[in-house]
Image (cartoon, rainbow, N blue to C red; front, top):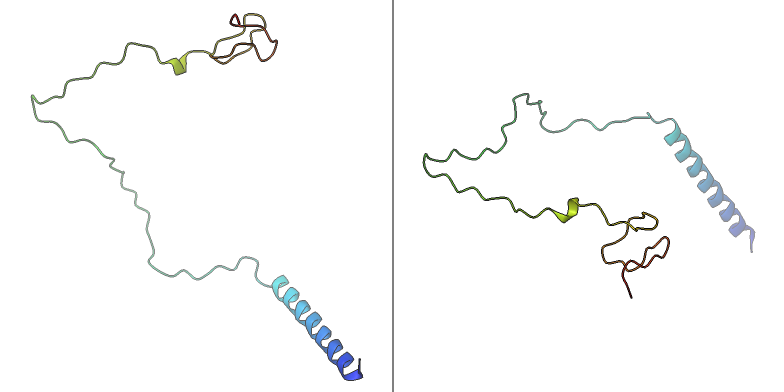
Length: 107
């Protein structure tokens, strides 16, 4: 390599290091919480009470018939079955206890 190429590489390296130092110093001394200027409409809080959807009152005599609730209990509220041997909660369709291996149903 000739001397002109070496000088060019050294100058390019020094320029890169100088740019890196400049960027670090600039970010270090910048204001920590610069906020963008507020642009657009200024909104005021609305302190009025919120009116949620309310069904319109029905005319007299046109009441809808009430639907009776189902009489069967909801199976989601029932407790899980338990192993008679170790009292571990098991699945409804389990054939063996996952903890102790007790046979829940005859095979």
